[in-house]
Length: 329
Ligand SMILES: NC(=O)c1ccc[n+]([C@@H]2O[C@H](COP(=O)([O-])OP(=O)(O)OC[C@H]3O[C@@H](n4cnc5c(N)ncnc54)[C@H](O)[C@@H]3O)[C@@H](O)[C@H]2O)c1
Image (cartoon, rainbow, N blue to C red):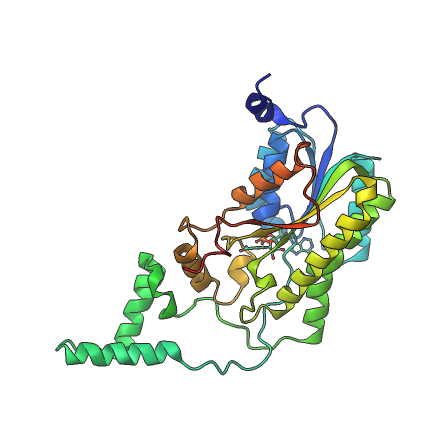
């Protein structure tokens, strides 16, 4: 059978294998669940959402997964909680069973995005707007700075003028409280090395399939410091180190370990980052393809690295961003 046709039918159909996705109700986790269901993997996913959101927003996506003819098991659980973690692990053992998990993906976004210290960045926006107002007055078209600011914000937020991202005000402000030690601990634990804890747990419980893939998500904030992103940035470094360690220590069990570095993507977690509206505009300009990354871009990549033929990369940070991170534009 033609390879492309076979892949469309589903590389994993009928093999009884599972994908376990933590953070599977939204963004990258949900898109990956849908893509892998189409490929024939059964899906067990955990997430934490209000019941109302599950009913009105998430349930139709879960229905779409079931329509692919695979099993879907969901746990709405706070995975900071030991008891709920135990329930999810029991669910994996019950449904996937020994050697049943082909993909384990950690895609939980639960990080504190707060500043380290009071923001003392010079008011570049104010300086630029005042300079522009003066220049307009010199041209015989005087405009008050407040009017100019309003017009800039309207053009940016309502008319899609991305190039104004250095002048517009973000609608996602920084929190008043500064980053605390507890914020750091929780963020680095959940988004940094929880992936390793789950990977090892699944291995020791005998739940990973031969050739299983362990995948987690990182961002460009692993190397550059976005303001308010310190805790998540620290977590990403821990995550990448954990993934490298798993790549080496779990290879004798046939397990491959990857971290996918997505470009800026419009998701609920992204939109909780202060200034993310400005970051999205900047990304659309800088990205060589002049668009944001989508969850589906990432899901396609994760599907590809689940395929049997993609077996020799291990311990990699794989960028799936259209070239955004390498673009100096
Ligand atoms: N959005 C971006 O631009 C971007 C870019 C690169 C990397 N990432 C990373 O991708 C990962 C997923 O982010 P996303 O943008 O898809 O976010 P998202 O908001 O779309 O999804 C987050 C998921 O985490 C779940 N979750 C949150 N707290 C939880 C908890 N306590 N217990 C169980 N589940 C919980 C949510 O229910 C949801 O399913 C994160 O690690 C994030 O840092 C995001």
